[in-house]
Image (tube, rainbow, N blue to C red; front, side, top):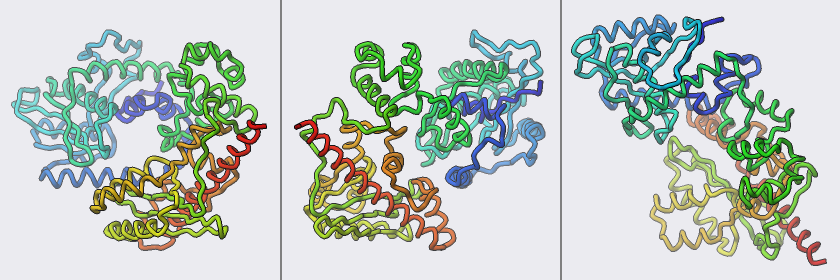
Length: 502
């Protein structure tokens, strides 16, 4: 068979999703989705972050110029032998025999044809420090520069992978392996823990790939959303009516359900409540039974644990609020408000837009003055993010704490109301999923929070107002979707309340 090259990227993907690693090696590239604009944006920003880190630390480096990984590795080794202080963009390579020689885990890789396997790592930087190695009175330790805000487990795994490779190449384990993250924060990796963990994961990953064992589909939208294999996996899951498409079915709960022989909507809907509670607890058992029934019947239901005496508030004037934000620039560039006058039966959208990030303060002031015109109006939104943003902006721009508290007392989280009152025949309780179920359609078919960020970046780069128009259209539709969802929820709960009375 063709040589299996275990790269650090495959290993990182394996830590996140085993199926993705399998598909990267054996999948049909024609079945991949086009790379999302937001992902391309992140890759570009990561390169800018690396360049900024090199500049801010005044690092003078040399870089292998070969694009071919094997030539790049040979050039990297030559630079290490020369004792270059900092190597940027190098490669590390080991055969299976070299890897096995330094592994301490009990379950080692055992294949009859070890020439079929090799290992490749690409640390961002290799830094020279004093010490004894096969090169002389110096050795190297790896640094990985990532765009993340926290040292994720998969980052630590790869940092240990690079340290292990260096231990073989230079004859001594580096004393450290580092991460440099978004705010130039440096993290030391606990190698004594992560080396052993990494070695075990490498064995699992290689065995899966060598056996060509295709992991089961499991759809987790937050984790899967940016993966180029999402549509491929989703279509398989849909054809199988996979349980991961049921809201509330986590990987751990899925294992429990399968262990009970519950592998379909019908079986979950029909199982004894007491039997289900024994395995996954009362609250989630009640929810999953109802959710399965709702999906099977394709109808909305009042949650079994909800008391219909409480309904979402309704007032003559209501505001529907949605935010567009650019996390990298730490700017909330659009505070969109839909004003609904139920007496006059009118709706008007008011966008408070920062055409430049420096205008955020003015946007905040304009927004504050606008909502203050309607002190009795409830402000409906669909997530905790809006509340957290108001707190951030109020603190940033020295808004009085009491005034902020009064404003926040008017906020009504519609996501909270939906999830505590009803069960709907949907795969997700996101705003888009719920509004689509109601028949609401966004004018920007490809619109999303991530896409809005890309549009804003494109606007700042090109000054083409079509990007601003797309942002405004998408945000306005978010506000209208929240409005339509609220109307439906109140009407449905009112009808259910009347039916309960009679």
